[in-house]
Amino acid sequence: MKLVIIDYGAGNIKSIQFAFKRLGVDAVLSNNAEEIKAADKVIFPGVGEASSAMKMLKKSGLDTLIPNLKQPVLGICLGMQLMCLHSEEGNTEGLGIFQTKVKRFSNSVKVPQMGWNVIKDLKSDLFKGIKENEYMYLVHSFYAEHCNETIAATDYEINYASALQHENFYGVQFHPEKSGKEGEKILKNFLELNTNN
Image 1 (spheres, rainbow, N blue to C red):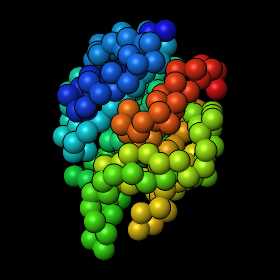
Image 2: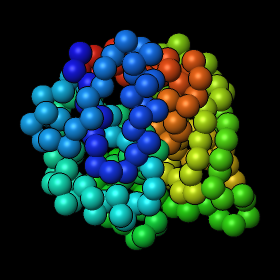
Image 3: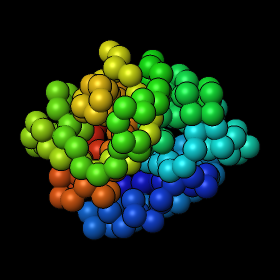
């Protein structure tokens, strides 16, 4: 299994790498187009601010590479948000993989949402063996609106999409690598996804 974590300077990549190591997979960090294309599975991480992360993707040509990948790709946190059409954060055009927009929580709730919250309405093999209302760890001020591609939902001020799927592209708003054994199970499920799903 060749697993590549896209390294473009926006992500807490080490904790993701350690999570896969616990599952017995050595993930390679790379921003090399050929190496990413040759991977069996790809992780698209992201921590930080949307517009500066998108600038880094454009600088390395990854903004055109990522939407054309054919193997399973998992976007985590900001990675998922960048795969959407547009983000209110820095008025950022996204990669357009998921047909939804990213909005900011209002000031009527504590922003960022930080800590444990439940995921529900689970669809997709990504959540095989995960129970409804399982707790996951989240840190975010922006959320993806519901769309036809929603595969998990979470309530915080409103009900929003905490996971998305379009063909071979998956995205999760929460941090599976920080979500204990259930989060680890989701990463394991990702590794086991059939490439033709």
